Every structure is written in C-alpha cells, then in structure tokens.
Image (cartoon, rainbow, N blue to C red):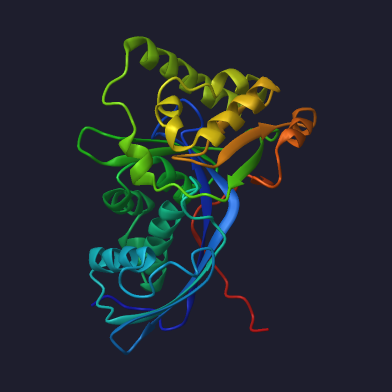
Length: 307
C-alpha cells in the first residue's frame, strides 16, 4: 500500500523561457519568478482549491485546474489512492505570456504529488516526472527547465520519451523579461507554425542553436549571433506584431532579444552597457523586469511560518 504524508507539503516551481531564438522546442531557461504550491491530503473526497496572484480571477477551482489534473495523473502513476486534498496556489508567473505557466503547473503538480507520497522519490525519478509531464505538455523545452532549473536542452527520442541535459549558464548571463498586458494562447501560436521549412532555414537554425549552447555557458559575447531565429518567430509575427517590433528594435540597439516561448513576452540578454538600451521601451506598453536565472527547478521547500 502506498503511504501518504498527512502534513501539508509545499513546492515552488520557476517560470521558464523556451526556444531562446533558434532552438525551437528544445532549449529552455529557468527564471527567478515562481509559483508557490501547497497541498494536503484530506479524508473528504474531491478538491478544494485556493488561488491568489496570477489567474485568481480566471482559473477553475475544481478538477479542471491544471495543477489538480497533473497531481491526479501523478497519484495514478504512483498507485496512490488519494480521494481528496486541498490545494493553495500563489501564482507569480504571468499566464498566456510565453513564460511557461502551463509547464510550471504541470511539473509543479507532479512534483507536489510525488512529495505527498512518503517514498515518492524512490517510486518516481526525475526522468519519470519529465515523461509524465510530456504526456500533458506535448513538447519538452519548458518542462525540462521547470523541472531541472538552469539552462536545459531537451529532446524526444525515437521511442517518444523525453530526455534533457542541464547546464549552468555563464555567470555574466543576465536576463530581462518584457511582458505586455495582452495574452496569447500557446495553441493559437502553434497553429501559425509552418508545415515545412527550407533546408537553408533548418541549417541556419541548427548552427545557431549549437552556438547558443556555447554562448550561454562559455561566452555570452556570442549571444547576438546565437539568438537569431530563422523559422518560428517570423511565422508567428501576425499574432504578436508589437513583440516582433520590439525584438527588432532591441537587436538594432545591440541587445540580444527573442520572443519568449510562444510569446508575446520578449526575453533580452543584457550587460551593463546594453541595459541602457532598454530605456527605449515604453513602460506604458511593457512591464520590464530583470530576473535572475533560477539554478533550481521544481522543489519541495519548508512551509512558511504562520504570520
């Protein structure tokens, strides 16, 4: 019989930025913005969900909640009979902005459920967490970064299983997120992708994706060349024209900038000199925030003391 912890369990999970220019559906970066999840098993059937922060006015508070669905799938995988639980979500990751909110919900929910099982880590490895998350997310870039933290490169092998490599970004890598007020559903953004690309486009993105790994881990001075995309950003430009304009504006000013994930947020890599170029951004249109790269992915942390 699978044992359950009866005390409350807390997990934090980071935002992520995927693609990073040319490395479509494969590269991801964990960012220092976190959703905070707390859950506890109850003797009553069903779930009670509390939400504060991002999504508090729009997310469901029942079995339709993505964290709840992910927890249920993890409990089933672990063979744990959990008729009911309470869940509290304190969300800081913007929704529908290309910053991995769905990946955070999926990975956070699975890791939370695993932590609620007394020997969950022995029963479910991180590799198995990644695979279970892939079944719901469909692509491995954001979920790998949300799970492992740092800079990740992920792929799906011939058997349909996800795998990932985690690397520490160079100490000089600094990231700024520029978040618009408008949202964009990932499904809508993916519907605009081309069905095929030319050999030249594929070759250019492959080469720059290889440079991206070097630039993020060894030589950030190469980030301008490493972040140039030739495939997905232009294909989806009609969905976020202001974001594409901002990327072009920043790159013309010497700032390596990309569409973050499916957009419409923009991710910029800055140093002391190029950070000044961000003054061209209209604060009325964009929330501009420098955030650290999170070295940690989804993890259990101690409960905060009651105020």
